[in-house]
Amino acid sequence: MVLIGILIVIIGFALKLDSIAVIIISGLVTGFAANMDLNEILTILGQTFVNQRLITIFILTLPVIGISERYGLKEKAVSLIKQVKNLSTGKLLTLYCLIRQIAGAMSLRISGHPQFVRPLINPMAQGAAISKYGKLDKKTEAKIKAAAASMDNYGNFYGQNLFLASSGVLLISNTLSELGYATTGLDIAKASIPVAIIAFVLVLVQNILLDKQLERQFGKKNK
Image (cartoon, rainbow, N blue to C red; front, top):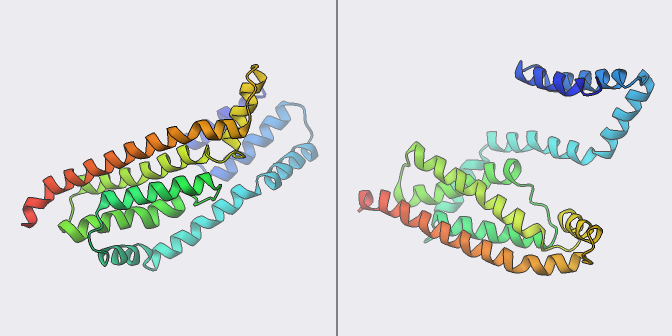
């Protein structure tokens, strides 16, 4: 019966009910099913909210990004990229992936898809292609959008393990130590360097192929 809260969440989301209300009701029902009183349930909910306040800060940034988009953030990003000569979509995405990896290695948070890729990187990547080839079709726009999102994933995933005190590195190190393999965060970070380099080389190749594909598809039309 304690797991009934999961069922409530599934049903609530499936019916597209208010998310916050569904979660709160799920928590209350789960608590009552576990023979907890109301005061204890509210205490746990409050402590969890305080302990996870960074998530709340993350949520608060979304309206700010939305307002920035409403007042021309994307348009300014596209305009800026159009002024840069010889900058292709692939080159821009490769540069962003490199920046993402370096930021991960230094444990600097760029925030990722909602705050960076959607309002800035994807519009700039689209703008680089538009400035070179003109109007793009929907399929190409979707391809560039997917490529921009993948650059953030690659850079973050392979970059964060370069920082010896990141949560992922510590988890790997502790797990290996518990299994009898004496390792430190520094050992994991060193082992992650060649993997990050290989990942970046593959990213470079992927973006070169993307540029060539765009050139084949739209280059002849603009000659």
